Amino acid sequence: MHISVNKKCMITNLEVLKTRLIDRILLTGNQTLLETIDNIFTLSQNPVNEVLDFTSEQIEMLMMSKEDIKFNRLIIQEELDKSDEKWLS
Image (cartoon, rainbow, N blue to C red; front, side, top):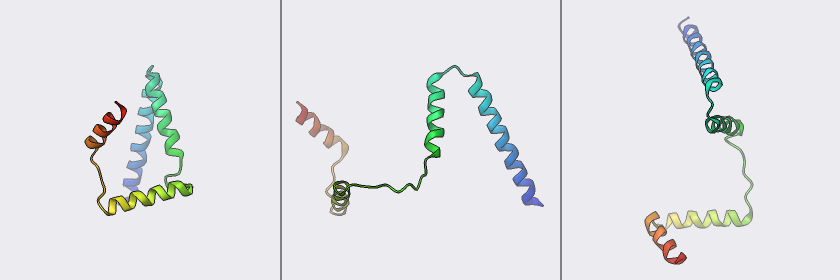
């Protein structure tokens, strides 16, 4: 019986949240916000555990990166930025 009450409360809280969001969406005139909300819904519909197909080149790069990490061949972002600035100038 205690579990049924909790499930009922969760459903009620979910319904309240949905209603509150719908009300706020209907009231806003912020197109950027609405587009962002739409993007969130679109992204949440894509499977999280989607199998990705990598090219052989991508797999090779991933393996090289894994090896770099294993042997501590790393560079901090600041050093990389400085190197990029020097290379670009």
